[in-house]
Length: 301
Length: 301
Image (cartoon, rainbow over all chains, first blue to last red; front, side, top):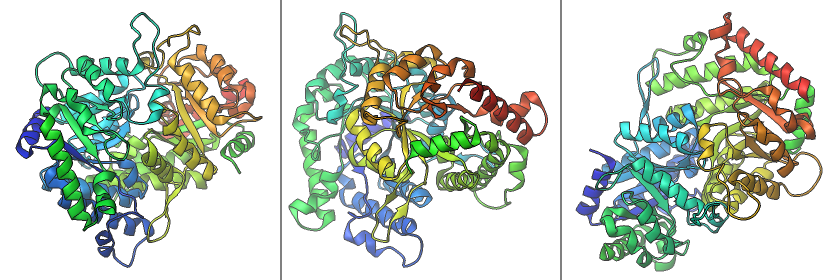
C-alpha cells in the first residue's frame, strides 16, 4: 500500500494529524530515561541508551494522540554508531506503537549519493553478503536545492519502497527570507519557494488523491498555505513550527482542503517539554499537550 | 590552528590539491577488501567491514598524492550503525595517513538541529555521562537553502572546532539549472548561486587569506569559476565533477588566484575505478590516476 494511502487510513483511524517530533538532547532527557543506563560503556553508548529510552517513553506517553513520529537524524548521528542504533530502536518502537515514521534528515545530493540516501532511509543496499536493510522509515525529508535530477533517485527509491518524500518548499525559520523567499525574474513575481512547489507538483504528477510526494511548509508563514495548496494540489503538507517557533494550528485550515491527511502538524519540544510549564509527570503532560493539539487540528479538518 | 591554515600548509607540504572522494558501493569494492570480512555477522556488518577495508586500501594506494579525503556519508549510512563505525574507522585511517577529512553530507537544518550536525561532524555532544566525541572531521559540506540562520550554528560549531564549512554554491549536476541557476528579480540579473556566493562571503567576513568558510563549486561549469572567485575572494573552492562528471582540471585556473589551496580538485570514481580502464592492480592504478591529477592541478597553481 502506498505511503499516501497508509497515511490517509491512519489519520482517519486515529483521528489525528499530529506528528511527534523526536529531537532528543542528551542533557534534557526525561529523568526516567537515565535510569535505564548501564554503568559501563562510552559516553556515547550510555547517552544513546538513554536517548532510546527517552524516545520510547515519549512515544508511549504521547503516541496515542499522533499519527507519526519524526526523528531528527542529527540528534542521533551526534552519538555516532551508538546513536544510529538508538535511531533504529526508536523507529522499531514507533512502528510497534502503530505510528508512521518520517525520517527527518533533509538529505539532498546527486546521482548515486541520492540513491544511497534512499537506500539508507527506506530501502535496502545490495551487498556481496545479502541485502542490508535500511532504517525502514515510511517517509523522509529532502532538500531540493540541487534540482530535479537530485530528487529523482530519492523519489525512485521511495516509490520502490512504497514510501513518501517530504520536500522542503518553505521552511519555518526567519532565514527562509534569504533564499526561499527571493523573487525571480520574469513577469510572474514568482518566488523561489513557488518554483520549488512547482517541482514538487511535477514529481507528484497529475491524478486524484494525495501523492507520495509531499512538502514541508513552515507553519510560521500561514499566509502562504493557501498558495501552497494551489500549487501542490496533491501533496501532503508537513507543517513544522507550531508551538516553540510561534506558529498556530488555527492558521493552517487551507492545508486540509484535500482531506484531513493533507496537513500534518509537527510538534516536538512543545510536547516533550510540556511538563516544564504544565507540571505533572513528563508522560502525562506530553499526552495532554499532544491530545490538545490533536483536538484543535481535527476540529479544522 | 584554523582549518584554512592547516589546509594551506598541507597543500604546500604535499604539493597536492587533490581530494580523494570515498563513496564505497558494497558491490563494487576492490577484491582485497572482501578478504578481510569474517564469516559471521549481519549483511550490514560484513559489508561495513569490507567498506572500511576498501577505503583504507584506497587511502593507502592514492592518499600520498592527495591532501584530503571526502567520505560521502550516504554510502556509509546505508549500512546503519555498522556503516557509521566504518565511517569512523575510515576517518581515523585518513588522519593517520596525514590527510584532512571533509565529511560530505550536505547537511542543512535550523536551530538546534543544525547545531547537532556540527556536534556530530566536527564537535562533541555534552551528555550526563561526559562528552561524546563526534566524527572528528576537519570540515564538512552544508546546504544553504534554509538561509543564513541555518548556517550560523554550523559555522559557530565549525569555528569552535577550528574546522571548515564547504557551503554548496553551484553544484556539478545538470539539475543545478532548476534552482541554483534561476535569475532573480532586480536590475542585476543575479542568479540564485550568486546570492548563495554572497552569503558565503558574508559569513567569511573581510580579511586577508583563505577563510574557513568555503564553497562547493561544480567543475562542470568552469565558465562560472572566475565569477565565483570575484564574489568569494577568501573561500577555498571544492571542485567536484572532474572525470566521471565531465569536468576538466585545466578549466579551473581562476580558482587558484588566491593561492594553491584556493581550489581543491575532488575526484572519486575516476581514481577508485582507474584499474577498470588502465589495468593493473586497483591500488597501483588509483595511485597513478591521483598522481596524474595532482601533477596537472599543481601545474596550474
